[in-house]
Length: 261
Length: 261
DNA sequence: GACTAAGTTTCAAATAATGGAACCAAAGGG
DNA sequence: CCCTTTGGTTCCATTATTTGAAACTTAGTC
Image (cartoon, rainbow over all chains, first blue to last red):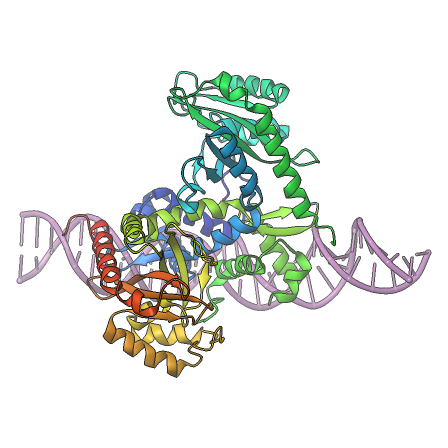
C-alpha cells in the first residue's frame, strides 16, 4: 500500500505516468517527462505509446508533445454522473445557494486532497468541467477540514501525511498538531470554518455530508468574502448548511439502496 | 489493430475494464461485469482491485458494487483544460450564442464518435441531452458529419466502420453510401446540417474547425428546433458559424505554437 | 445440514514488461 | 562539411508479472 500509488503493477505505473502528464498542466515533451519520471527511457516511452493508443493521451506530432486525451473527458462525464455526489446533490445545493445568496461548493476527498465536484453560484449558472474537477488542499479549506474531522484515525493519518502545510495566509494551520486540535473542535461543533486560511479575503463555513453509518461522503460549504460578510454571519447559516448536508446524505443513501432492490 | 482496442497489454485490458464499468451507467456488481467481460474470474477480479486501489474505481462495500472513481473527475478537468478546444473556444462560442440567440455546441471526435466538450445555451434553453463529456453518433449529427467530411480517407473508413446506423428519424442517413454522398456535399458546401436526423424537432447547422494544415480539430454547431426556426434560417447563419470556427482555429494554433504567428 | 451462488485466494506455467544499449534523425558548432 | 550533441525510437535477452483453472470461503436457500 504505497502512499503514492506505484505499488500495483504495470497498470499502476501507467496511471502514474498519466498523472504526470496531467500534473504538468500543459502539453509536455518526452524528455521533460523523462526527467521527472522514475522510469528508464524505453519504459516511459512504451507507457506513453500505450496510453496514446488507448486515447488516454493525445500526441501532437507537430510539436512532439503529449497531452491528456479526450477519452478522459468521456470517462469523467460518466464518473461525475454515476459516482460523485454532484448529480444527486444538485437541487439541494441550488436551493442553498439561493437561500444564502452566496456561492456553494460541493467537495469529496480524493487521495488526501479536496476535490470539488460541483459549485453553485447564486448569480450565475454552473459551468461543469471548468469548476468541477479542481483540487485543493485539505488542511486549509473549510470542506477539507470538515471531512477530515469525521474520518477514521487511519484515514486522517494517511491524509495528513500527504499535506504540504504551506502557509497561504497568517491564519493557515501549518502543522499537523494545530490541524488535529482544530479537527477536534470541528467534531464538537459540527461545522468548520475557513478563516482566510487558503486565500486572503475568502471565508467559508462548511459541514460534512455523513452517511448513516458515519462514513464521510463529502462536504458542503458556503463561501463569501470578508468584504461582503463575516464568519459570524456565515455561522448563522450553519444550521441551514447542515440541514442541506443531511438532505444530500439521505438522498444519496436512498439512491444507493433503491426500494425494489 | 483493434477496433475495440484490447491490443496493448495489461494496461489496455485494464482500461477496457474501466470502460466496461463506465458503459454500464450505474454501479455494477462483480458478477454482472463478469458476464460481459472476456476475462476469466480471477483476472477480472485483479483488474478491479488494481483500479480500485488506484482510485479509478470506487468500491462500495455495502452493496458490493464498483463505480467510476473520483480520480477520473480530477484527470478530466485537466484533460478538458489542457487538451480540448473548449477553454480556447469559450469566448468565441459565447459570442456566437449571443449573436444567433441559439444553443451552440462544440465537439471533437473520439474513437469515431462525437464528443461534446462544451455547450453554450442561449437565453431559452433547448431540451436536449448533450453536455460536456457526453457522446453522440457521428453519422447523424451536424458536428459529426462536419468533422467526417474533412477527415482523411483512412480516418473516415475507420470511423464509418464504428457507426451503428440506427435510424433515429426518417431523415437519418442509414447506410455508409448515403453518408458518403452527404459528406461529399458537405465538403463542397463547407457546412453540414442535421435535419432531425438524431432527434425529432431538433435541427442544426454545423461547421468544422480546421487547422492550417487541414487537420480537423473539432466542429461547431448552432442548434434550434423546427418549432422556432428552420434549416433555411440556420443556413443564413452559416457564414457566421464558419467565421467563428476560423477564429477558434486561429486561436488554437497560436496557442499551440506561441512563437510562430 | 446439504446445496448453490458469489466472491476471493493459490500457484505453476505462460506471457508480457523491463531497461541497457544500440540506433536513427535532426540540430548545432567548429 | 563533418563531427558532436540532443532527443527520440527500436532491439532483445533477462526478469518479473500476469494469467486462469481450480480450490476455497462465505453467505444465502431449501
